Amino acid sequence: MPTPPRNNEPDSAESPPPPAPGPREDLDPITLARFLSGESDAAESVRVQRWIASDSANAAVVDQLRAAWDPAVTAPMARADEWDADRALARVRNQRSIHRVRWRITATAIAAALAGIGILITEQVRHPTLEPAHSYATTTGERLSVTLADGTRMILGPASRASVSMTPGGAGRPAVRREVALEGEAYFVVAYDAARPFAVRAHGAVTEDIGTAFDVRAYPDDPGARIAVAEGEVAVAAPGEPVREQGPVSTSRYQLRAGDVATVRATDVTVTRDADIAALTGWMRGQLVFDNALLSTALADIGRWYDLDIRVPDGGLPPVHVTAAFADESVDQMLHALASALPVAFERRGRTVVVRVTGFSR
Amino acid sequence: MASPVRARPTVLPPDDAALIVRIQRGDERAFDELFRTYYGPLCGFALLHLGGVPAARVAAEDIVQDLFAQLWSRRTAWEVTTHVRAYLYTGVLNRARNHHRTAGRAIVELGEVDVGVDCPAPDRSDAVVTANELAIAIRSAVAALPERAREIFLLNRHAELSYREIAVRLGVSVKTVEFHMGRALICLRDSLAAWR
Image 1 (cartoon, chains in turn brown, yellow):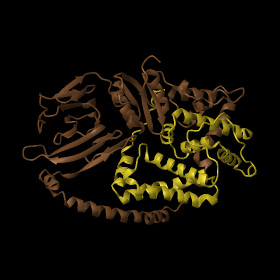
Image 2: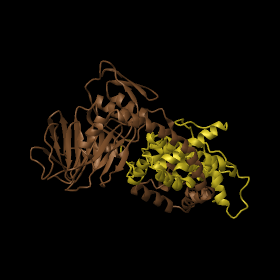
Image 3: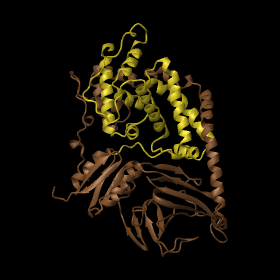
Image 4: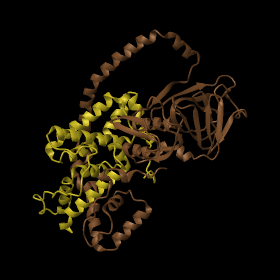
């Protein structure tokens, strides 16, 4: 992980405010504010409580501040029951109806267009699904957590799309097959049901759940699909391999356990054991983690994460690798850290970032 | 400081996510539910940012109604990456800022750096005689906080957003949020010294 860039930032908001003078000011205000807001960890809480108990004057200050921290004291006029929500809702509904009319017109236009593609619809009817496929999509900089009808939890990464369908199995097959077509990245905590296999299709690879939590990544600019297992077991089939309809997982496919990562490129499957799953799923916790990632892949991730338009030079990028983790950094801090460790320079204007290759000898 | 990561989750809770999905599909009952849950608290919050004076009540209600009307009309493009409550409260804050701006009041822009700890003196003219004088002193001290510190203090105390949620919504680092909260603490502590 590169050295954090904080010290180079010309942002004086990053430095703590000077402690006010006084004989007992041995606890900095940032720490005390964190404590009062419930943001301190256990060790810091103990330290602050000791400081409070050490002097009655400290306790007096904290008593006042606790009152100031209490919303009931600072804003009695902000009480929720003082406002007429029903009247306001009626007013907003009136404003809303204008939009609804416009929506109906659009719907009619869509219906007319659909009549022209009847063949597609017929095709759909021949392979009926129990419920229509639901699509969930995120844009850059966005994440979405969805609980599906069967209780499975899906957390969708930035710039991703997942289409969820339930298919009846037919004669001799499990009653229902749950399937997700994924483009981008998603984490699944599957509500296991032996009668209803759960499968994720991404870049042609099929990942089938055996009661588990796992991450699938397959952005269009990725060379293939990556499956990382956090808990339990999954089976992976490369594109073209037959997919099980029922019964135990076939031995011809790759079985992954917790800690395993499979990379599927074309029909090749590479399995890595004891991988750092926490790092690979850091995006769910608001972390952007690169573990020996190609610079081009890292920049694509950064663009999706921060909603940036990253322009790469025509000559391409050097094949260097990045290992880094970012959580609370601003865009500029992160770009600065990358530029100081890699042979590139960034120029940011709004959401456009132009990348220049500088060579290592700077 | 890439780590440590705070234990507080930034992933959407399933309840919020389910409600968002329902609203995005055009479910009016889900919208009404969201409206009734948040309307009162958001109006109170808007009023605080407009100075807490009764005359600002109408403006506060307008801000919140406008937020919800826009939320509905743009629901398919609705981007929620934090808790719904964080989204709504920061939406109110942004509108309150615009309200100030159009009312001709100077506002510290997002990302602008405040230098030093310059605490304006709170207005004490109305204070002192009531039994509730500390509460009144606290209120005027909060009202007198530097703009940015006051916004962040209110997001933390009244909207009950974590430092991390505030940082995400305002597009600043958690350190910056900590800085302003520390600054608010210094100002409040000093303003209240006379009541100790």
